[in-house]
Length: 366
Ligand code: CA
Image 1 (cartoon, helix red, strand yellow):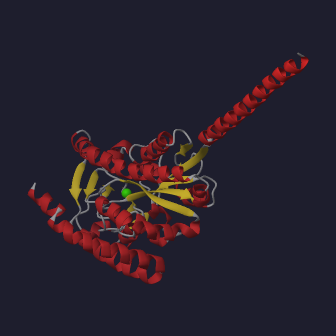
Image 2 (image 1 turned 180 degrees about the horizontal axis):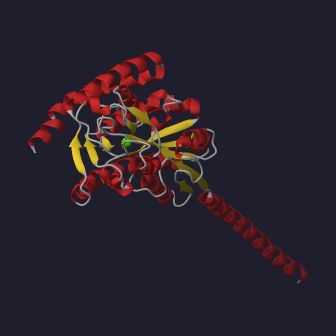
Image 3 (image 1 turned 180 degrees about the vertical axis):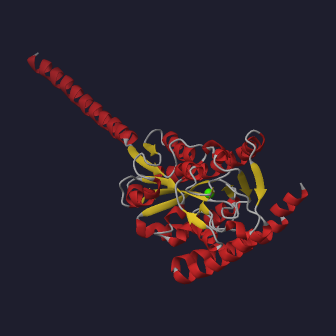
């Protein structure tokens, strides 16, 4: 009896022990799965835009939101506007040294440090938005961009496009080249150099500083983006004449920059999510500008009595001549600019040939 009781107790103990092992293993498995699911990252993104600014600024916000949703909250990115963490023109350095993981802005703001960067935003009389996307993603542009930013510990991605911009706001009429003399204009990148060589004076400043400087006469003219954004900044209250076409920025690409070490620390799926979300935002922004610009232009002209003007042909011809002159000089001085320019200009020649009989032919017909 004692023996049988002992056996039964031993049997119960064994069952209990095995159950314990089974439950422990299952719990371990669940815990492993749970810890994998819960692996999450909290990042920061500094931008060159005013916080929640329509179009370009909300592009950065939309990118963060999309990454959050696509990753089910595993990669959360807090977005900072110009000046919240760092001033606009320090975004590149801040992400480069890894103080924050990401940035959003425009590559041509960094030409003082990386002259060839401007090719990845826009060059005067260059590619439009559709062509920029084609060059970057199917024409070797992305690879060249990565090579250019590699020494700065940065991974660049196309992060938006505004489409063809406006030539800008002027507080006096431009009827000839003579009228450009002495005009101080906010105009970044290579276009700024063109403007200066044509007799004006280019000034670089972030968007948020344009209005006050234009209104107080610190500058006489400014380019920003196009009707949708220019209306929100109220430039029509500071300058009367609104000029087209945006010779200087036919399809400017914005950039998302990611610190290389931060990127490498992510699991593969989050890396893909980041790249895919940036690509989606790149297209989404262009769609928004394409949809909203004309409504805003109608409001500027009809409700705010803005004088819409086309830049005179001789001014545009001179801008183009100087652009070509400066590009020759730039490619002689800087090896990276030479390499990127050769790629982009060959691409432009090639794509233009087909666009003459496709896009342009349709524009003429409709
Ligand atoms: Ca612009």
